[in-house]
Length: 228
Image (cartoon, rainbow, N blue to C red; front, side):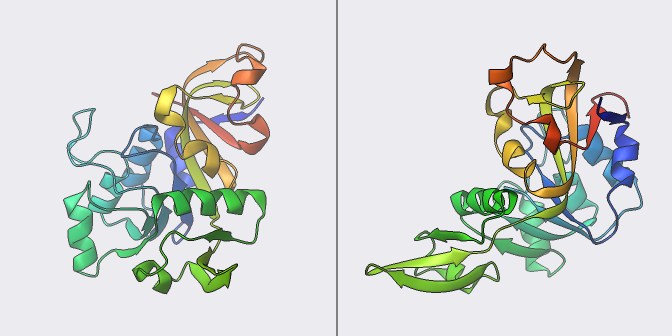
């Protein structure tokens, strides 16, 4: 059986200066309890890898939704993601030099995380050629193959991935509902420690094998939502 911890205990596993992947898409599929516990903890200098900067005024009525609260509190100092447009505060902090931002195309971001999880050396893509992406610190080099230009993007890994799923069985196998899969399945492969916040814990076998989207072998800790 996977070790079950509280959101507060999960937050304590994140140390100052760590790189942290947050699964979710504008907060959909985010580990809300763990993020809240991180915001209430003493941790600082979080180097985040996320798709976006989440939302102000979230679906749950919060003023700063999901990881937007870590941006607001200043705990997040570096951001690698695909856009900031959903959170004006993040854009303002970037402009003021208070948040280091590296933007990459969304599809490239997903593939870079997948490459990190699969042990690949990089991602070869034409996306971003001829744009400011060429100057990104996440690009190894620009190269030509068969008369076409490509960018060789670096793989991405993190110290910790904080993901969320609808159900987990006691072996840590995860099932996601609808679009909450998003970046969660990729990030579960690309971090040294994986913490999964879930809505429901079930017995092994209650999730049909063909419906397991993240294998329990990838998950280190489970947090049952509501056990703060």
